[in-house]
Length: 307
View (tube, helix red, strand yellow):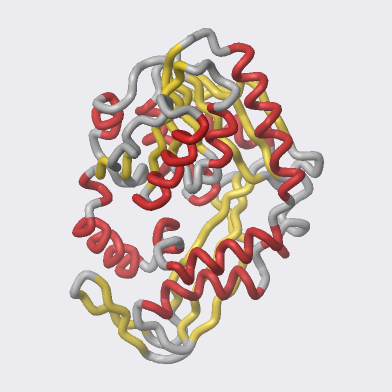
């Protein structure tokens, strides 16, 4: 198996700096909810209960077929941004020409190695060196990717855009795209407002999963509360840990004091409509070319390119 190449943005020292900065700013980055075996197990339990797998598969399959039929290159690269286990990305890869290289990327080294292994089982020549970096913080990322991937690129961006304010993640995503590239992204949607989808987050499984971060870093008694908040024209689900007793959280050799009544933002999930997603992408020069939705309209996969 090809070895993972780690960008400085995800070196152990930098991760510890990022962890302390999250606590200092009282806003936890999404990557810190998937670090431990217990966090992973809690998330998988949550996903099993609230993700409708049959519904979710449909738009990815439709998008894969549409992209494959219009992709003009016999050789190129499929670069999976935030690949996780890589299942959805590899399903796209299987519809593309055999000469397409697969470049899994994520903040997690074990996950990119797993995705590369699965791709290699499908096509031994497909998997390139996996890349480990933090898209939200990495500098010189295009140059880093250029060293390990060819031209004619399809970027997949599944399950990432909901967990960041658009003004944070979209400028970084835009810097990667060239005119001939295609971007295949997924977004959580709220076609009928936030109330119908709130139970997917406001439940004991979600609270237990998210509470792991403060608990493992020194937080004492507290409560995770789930709310709906607004950011400009967008609404998002937010989860905050509300401290009920004094405590000191520790990271990177630093100590951070919290008092009863203080809160720590643990999680956000931005929700879109097809129209609001297009409006959100437009200022960054990204245009939706085709859309594929689940039957209930609560998840979409979008083929995008530069305007």
